[in-house]
Amino acid sequence: MSHIHVLSVPRRLAQPGLTDFPYASFGNLQLLLRADRGVYTDAGVTPAADGQTVQQWNDFSGAQRNFSQATAGLRPTFRLNPTGFNGRSAIEFDTTDDQLTGPGTLDTYIAAGAVTVLVAMRVLTTALSRFAFKDSGSFFETGWGATQTALTRNWDGTQDAASVTIADNATFILEHWHTGGNISVRANGGAANTVASGDTTNLTGTPWIGTNLNGSIAELAVYDADIGDANRTTWRNYANAKYAAF
Image (cartoon, rainbow, N blue to C red; front, side):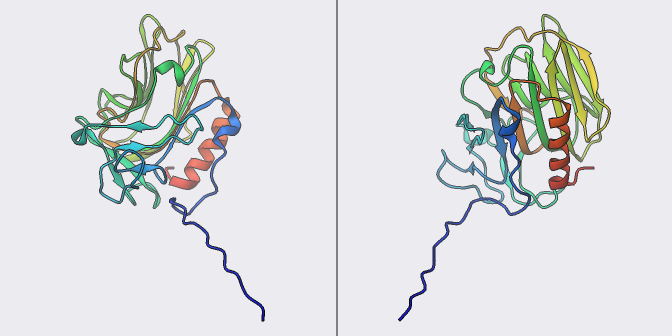
């Protein structure tokens, strides 16, 4: 008598959709956060359900730089299917005190003269001091610099800011980079704004995500290099196909 053996396949804690993007193929990947996996209500044991607060967001770069928040009242919220992300999950940060903190200092994420930050996010209202990725000393920041303005901001002895116009209550595929003595930002495939800026003068600050954001982050990657226009275009096309931002 023949027997049929059925293999048990473990359930993957991730949403179905596009094939995983090869972030590491660009080289120099230092941080990769995705809201469709690795989001926990505690210190990495219990996956967050819709509407629950997030204590830990795991890094998938291979460096194990998991971001977390020890104080319950300062934790962002996991949203399974929020507005504006094409049926994908996102982590929602309020405008006052939600924030996640990463291990180490800024120099483990970026180089003084070279960095790329890629973010898929939605902002409800833009204003000063709303950030996706920054350090505690405010020497390198990505986020919003003024009403309806996205920016890359760097301190090289003086503060420099590259900025582009965006809209409130909208989803954006944002590219921030620093290379060759310049900082740049691009939103939803539009024209990049580039401003001269030298090496970041201090890399000892603590990395933060979502500071005063008043919005949501679905995906965020940080490289300690300029990954180049071709790779940014490849990522932009992937992210827009996934989140339908523009």
